[in-house]
Image (tube, rainbow, N blue to C red; front, side):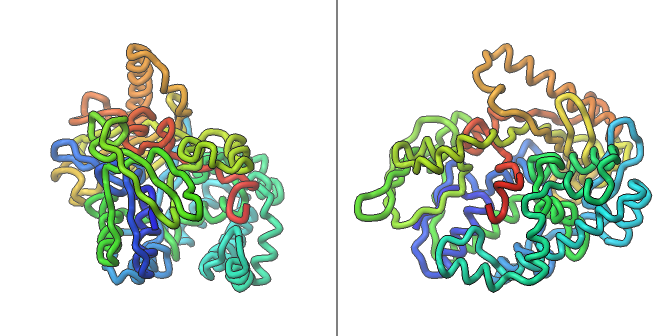
Length: 456
């Protein structure tokens, strides 16, 4: 059994399969696991590459269940309260997503009067969704066993919520008489884009209802001590304990079916990029044959890997999707006293150039920065392809413009000037292409539109 990609999905799949007694080899192009939930260091600072918060550590949560299954202690983490603070353009007071459901209810009543019908409907859909997911259905079902698992998970509430399967979050707003609340819509677009890659009028209602409830108990968002790498390191330990093997610096270049069954995996091994990030074209060839393959790369990578073996129908479906998002990510460090405005550890700012910001700040003593200092990470979704094909001068000019816009946004939301940063750098889709090996440095998944989430 081969698993390709040692992000959280690949590590989890490999550890579970190895734990069931299968011989598992996990291939990772980078020199470390974790993918976009990994980390890197600059002097005394540790930066989370992409993901900066984690869900599922609560009792019954997916990561808690996995760690119990593996017999591992949970990584040290603290619940986020608020889970996020959202500052709309032109406003000074943020909207805080409190962990306590009643406190969040009071906050949204104050911020969005007259919207409770919408929030109550979302809560009902989320409750049904969460109970359904907790019974481990298989979606979409592909055989009799899958179908049996799915049918055992269905309850009357599941069938009722299924009526909203083709609806969007914007449809729920209209149904509840809230479609005219433009301020609420701006808030929802910010939050949903962060998780579903889509605004309210293109986010599936069932998906969006759960996303909007994730910051509150009994779920919640968590801040890992040390770095996000703690999560992947623990999963690597589970894989090794189960007898699985993980090979870093192994980049897959072709995936071919073997006559009679199985797959041939061809690739390059060694530190493939000039920066050691696994994104170059050098290295020694390798070949691995496997009966089954779990591929956790984006589906847009499949045509290049499979070539003529790509199923035509699936190829057409993938070609019909828009591109996932790329990212611009600012990595900075500053004296904690320079952050004069209280955002909490995570926040969003509605911003124009280069786009809306998601900001994460390290906690004092969490291992990411020396005492009295903080790391500051600000990410912006961007179209990825336009960053490629630029000459060096055009690329650097575009990068400088984006950096200036992010610095201005951080000044707005944190009260810090560019000259106060002790360290600062900007990653573009080009950097993420080297880091992840993904086409065009895509970091977002498929947009969770009604026709492509869950059962579809």
